Image 1 (tube, rainbow, N blue to C red):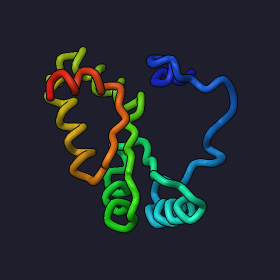
Image 2: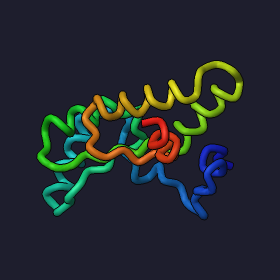
Image 3: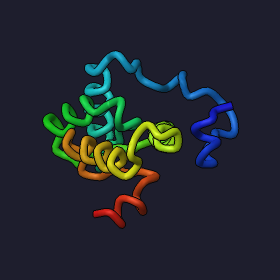
Length: 122
């Protein structure tokens, strides 16, 4: 059971994604995969999860001439909400800090479950 995906009703019906995911410790591989995607015709690059890959967002923004999208995934959303629920942080302040950090890293587009809340605050 994947609690994060269940929390936002996006659990995969079947399968294991580990067979096609990149090595999280290898940022050079990420750059190679992005270059290949662009060569194959990608108009935009999607990087997810956003918070774990702020360095990749920055490197991609500096290297490639295409829009960079960052996906603030359900696990990141749940982590922040859980911390706020337990009184460990101010939810609105932390949410904005997270979104600003993704933007500062170089994301042109941010996809987030916080979109409606952030829009009201901004």
